[in-house]
Image (cartoon, rainbow, N blue to C red; front, side, top):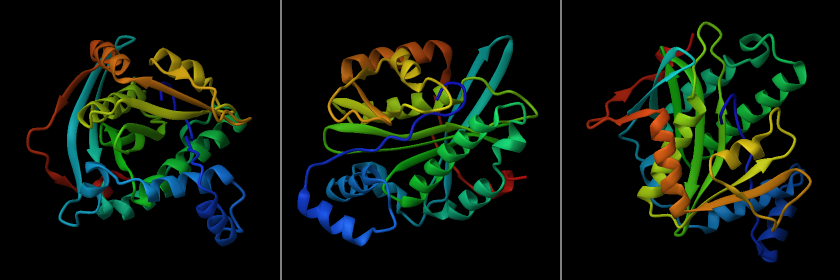
Length: 263
């Protein structure tokens, strides 16, 4: 997410038996891509991502700090790993994140679109399958990212910037994308993948292309554009982002009560 949020990626698998069961059990769900993604996640064996997520001994952990100097403004962004203990924080975050109030100068249709993207990201974090992080600057939430992996690929599930009306925070989205990219390298993923939403409030497809992703024309729909990059391109993009962002991981992450940062 570069200037404000990014996509709602969903993924297809071809398993008619699972599909039929889930269609029958989810009469209230009108989004077939959503059903496919849920089935896909259930069938993969999560890597270290979800194993850490479910460990009840941990709360939110500050795992990294990302600093940048952009447009004459220095931004310091703290990145926290979300765990199952942070459900209350996520509830408070959603209650207190209103794009109409936080971004009053934004067009109403864009406010509504960002709100929808933000809600999607929060729900995916709560889902428990993903590895998820929230970014804070000046102790104010400024972004959220959620992703997962199988044995060969890492998937960006959602990323969204949260407006900070008191002070503009630059490169919050890129900092979270950098975290995702670094995790994909740690997982030794051969590819990183996403589905870019076509009707987003900004041209996210072009933004992802600038980040090194290429369009994949299998399973393209009216609403989503599959995109991916290989591990060699991934390494190049990490280096490019590190030219903009000074990224430092915490050697000894400490548990933090994120609820204290909600106004």
